[in-house]
Length: 81
Image 1 (tube, rainbow, N blue to C red):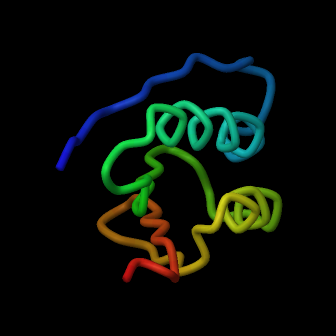
Image 2 (image 1 turned 60 degrees about the vertical axis):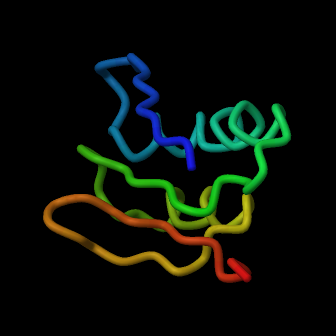
């Protein structure tokens, strides 16, 4: 299985969670575009608060099991069969 880190630089005047919410769909499209044997099933988010806007953004890409793990959000697809 492939692992990777995607880094983005956002507007420093926006809350971090808003920046992440704005790019979650792009990350999903990029990682699923190449038709990996297994689509992205886990997204770890560091440095952003757990806000309703961010939770809605990750839910829209199919990641609904969201937990706080060691100072980061771990978002997991609920249909990882």
